[in-house]
Length: 87
Image 1 (cartoon, rainbow, N blue to C red):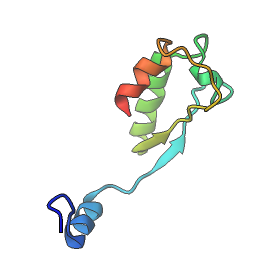
Image 2 (tube, rainbow, N blue to C red; image 1 turned 120 degrees about the horizontal axis):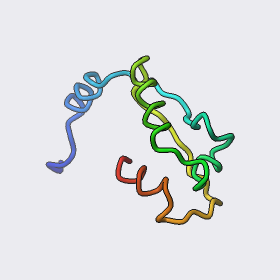
Image 3 (cartoon, rainbow, N blue to C red; image 1 turned 90 degrees about the horizontal axis):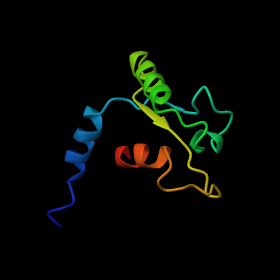
């Protein structure tokens, strides 16, 4: 057995120590779709931070955002550099 593979007991112990995932699909309040949330005119860093703090305060510990495959995004646009390092 490789040294990189945990025994089943260790993996179960780690999993049991993790909080239960409680999440939601996130679209900021100022966007009407997953596509719009990434557009230059709709991306609002401060609003997203505020909404994430609120979600954490009420007990959420994970969130899902969608990066639409067909979306033509400027990699230097407002959303991508902000979000990618946090993934």
